[in-house]
Image 1 (tube, rainbow, N blue to C red):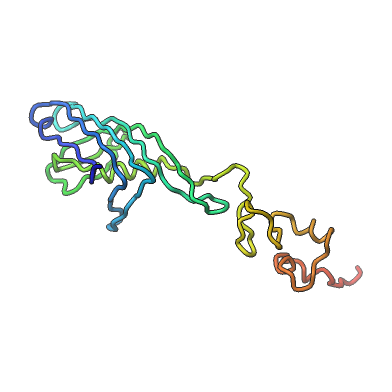
Image 2 (cartoon, rainbow, N blue to C red):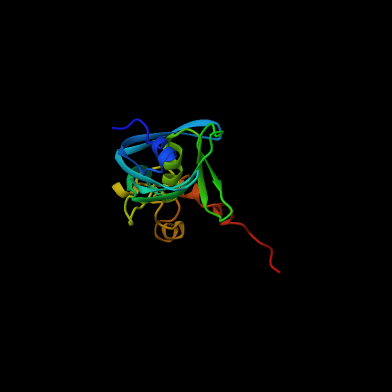
Length: 200
């Protein structure tokens, strides 16, 4: 297990030799907005990276990264394992004045990873790439029924007394609304039911 994804670029900078790194990670440590963050993985995530010289201080990084994220189901909040297969590719530029690696936009519109230490830590790059590749939301099952909006019961385990998955109008027609029930509280128009309006 690798503590951090490092690739050593000293030989490449001196003699234009290609560089290679691979390993597995159980998490990534990175900084965003001056705050330290940890991105954990559900199982060891393998990475493989090659860097080739483009001449001068410019290089090209390519490779693969296969993390498995743990996300919450958007409806019932159960944990969902989300495997990702990420193809890596970005320009690199060596700038000895750079205190820490950072991304900037080139004139061509491409992103360039600028670094100053020949022992390049790819943690921040891999973390940003992973977060961009992750889906905004997931479901543990396409048929997930979600949670009752009144009591929070997981409706995948069976109905609850509030039956929040059934429209309030259907419950009203079949059962009526018991006074003081949860459904009376759910229906924002219940108080208008007996409102008498003047004849026009």
